[in-house]
Length: 112
Length: 116
Image 1 (cartoon, each protein chain N blue to C red):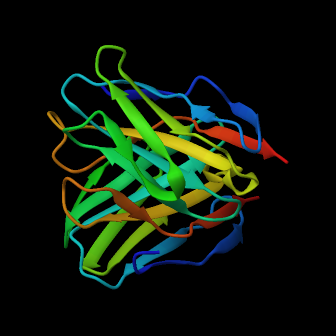
Image 2 (image 1 turned 180 degrees about the horizontal axis):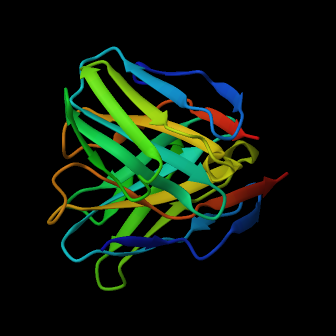
């Protein structure tokens, strides 16, 4: 698992509530990513980070924000959860630029 | 913009037979290509990658893939499939010419079912 921990692993929340997902890595890698996985779409990039306080938007960033105040933690926040954000969320890290990404175990989020 | 197509939602193969999972890509620059596998309720596991060099890439669990620049393809292959290879397979591409941050574009995934 390349030292990646996602929490929580499962969450059910109500529409309109804020939700924060956490990705924690133990090896001080610079690059971190949040993807969502939906049937028929594969994985799509939400946000990414290339260092502390350095973040940028991905392909499907609307309704999401991120923060990275420490190298080891990358937080994904749904400001006001909607049913369309029901998905499985994966965090990934990259050790160096020209190498593969390693993924966490995922967080299954259900918005009711 | 980069894109990845996995034309088959599902591939069915009998155990012991060859397995092929197809992937074609589109990038404006030079591609880095990856295959990942996902077992039920698990994260993605890296199988293999093409960065440069030999067009035939060997990876984990006996898998290999062939990079074909003229056909913009990167098909995943295994000579003899096992029941334990049943999983969801993803192809991914990064445009090394235009992307500075390691962002991946994934295909929709192909479910592989290997029957005994």
